[in-house]
Every structure is written in structure tokens, then in C-alpha cells.
Image (cartoon, rainbow, N blue to C red; front, side):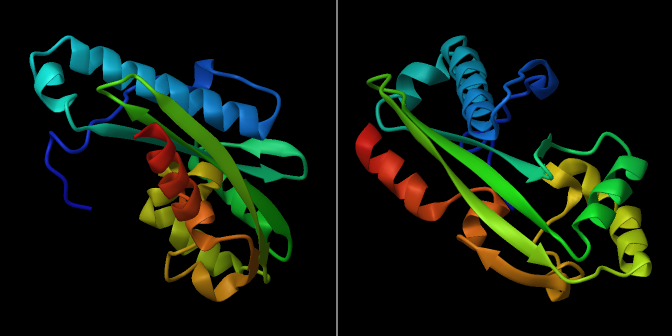
Length: 180
């Protein structure tokens, strides 16, 4: 994705210090923490007053729930391998949040969505290739649904694929309209 610095800002927060028991509570807390960090950074620059007149800030977060356990980004290649092997022939739930902050009014609207992903058996050589590409450490649950090596092993998605990919479109549109 190509973005310029005024259109895209990283929250740069330590997500591991924010803990919640329920997946929906966790993804909402993370989206809020990201928004707080970005708003704080913007307020410390002269840019905030100019951009706040017509800017909506959209933050989001996603986790995977497997056998009742919340999975975020894997911390190692070994953990990524364990995650993906677990999905093979099984299913996982994806829970994602969206938070829209109107920088002019301070109004915030957010929500969360969920989807279930069912997998065929994923061969070890495919898992090895995915791990060797390195992206598995940068995504919730260690697996990208849209990756060309992953997609053939997705049996079904119950819910929307955009929820699985990290930004539920219908929820985002609803939150934008409510935040205006």
C-alpha cells in the first residue's frame, strides 16, 4: 500500500501491555489506544489544527481466537508454525474492531465484528513456505487469508472476508457516518 505521511500515521504503541479477557474488548481497547496515541502526537505538532478541520482518524485492530485462546501476532517463527498447524483442518474466529475519531469534534464511534474461517488441511511444505516469507510475524494469528498460498486452503468464511482481512467495510462506513 502506498501512502503519504499525512494520510497514514503509525500509532507506535506497545500492544502487549493492553490486556482484556474478551476478544471484542481487547480489539476495541487496542483501537482506542492507537487513536489516543495518534491524536496525542498530532496535537503536539502544528499540523493538528490544519488537519482537524476535515479529518477523520480511523484505527482498527484484529485478533484470532483459536480453541478459546486469543492469538495476536506470533512472537516467533516457531509460534507462527504452531498457529498455522492448529488451523489446518480446523477453524478459527477472527474478531476485528474499527474506531473512527472526528478530529474536529472529538466524537468517536466504534464497534467490532467477527467471522469464522474454516480450513482444509494445510501441507507442511506450504506452512514452511509461509513461515520463510516472514510476513507471518506481522499479522494477527500468523496467517493472511488473502495470501495466494493460503487461499486454496480456506474451505469457507462465515461472515465477511473484509472482517478477516482487518477492516470490516460495512462497520467502517457506519462508524464514519456516525462520527461526522
